[in-house]
Length: 472
Image (cartoon, rainbow, N blue to C red):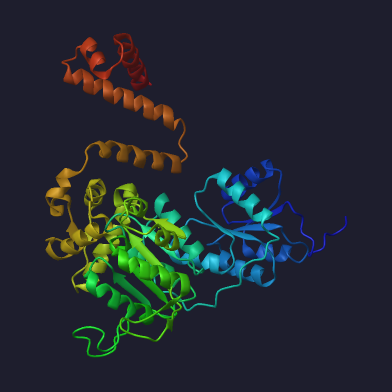
């Protein structure tokens, strides 16, 4: 058999590196069904051995594996100009996703992933394999751990976007309700970018009186207005080489929007009362809880400025849209508060975490954080109970409780590999509803059937089936 030269990879030769045999099998079969040739490896060492004889057209690698991790393998492949590489991981935090993209990954698949999406990502990477890749970002110092937390699908997408765009200099618009963590996203974009060694400067444009906002942004010269006794450097100059975060940009006065547009277009500005033209090198990240398109249509926001700011948009989900993240966030905030306030550590009882997950949070993550800080101080015991949560605990929607319990049971049953899960769940649901309806209607079958919205014969048949199951 003739060996294939290393410099001539097959266009359809895909390598999968993952210590989980199940992931390799399922993903490999999906790629083979798409007409691709697939080789599977359980660790980085096996890949390195195979590279002595061949090279892949594309490689998919897990991050955390025995021995060398996927990011180390990715860096080695990048140095040898082997790729493209797609990274897969169940750990979709900001630092990991950003590190993967910085090391040269063309895409990031968060586990568990949709197989159709994975195949599409492979095809897309193969199609673009011959296009020139952007230069590597300078080697960064180890970033500080991000305060952004979450493992829900909406947050995984947010992390993926941050990892994708952080290394670029594109302007970013962050949207989301008040309290969702827009400044945290802006800081993550800065910390994971090549500008991390330069300043990150934040300005809430809604918190500054309109007559002072121009001076805050651009600075002023001595004598520019009454009380201006010395030169003051504005936020644009303070952020030179770094990132300027403009929060609540939707509230900026129209006159100042015009001046900001000129700065974004030309990168130049004057201090208030000044004649010296100042050139700036600043990345703009803006945020708003408002609908800028609607404000532009109403004449309250310049459409051309909106398009300058909205090059890349990151939409932050409300906390009610990511309820599965609440226990993780609550425990983090509670521990953080105890450390900051020098208090004895506390923990949430399981029932308290469940109650927290059922509450409404109009103030989103910020409201949850404030609640946890308050509990760190006022909860009487080392374990926080549902009664400690206050009146809001009673406001939890009762309809969520049974579905949460069902979800937990299904997860445990699936993890244990149990059989006929759907049939057993349907049978248990039917039996529970029938018993409740009969109890509510004094055992009268016709009334119970009417209350449930089923026919009397259906109810009788289901009752008979439930008796047979109990006898078994």
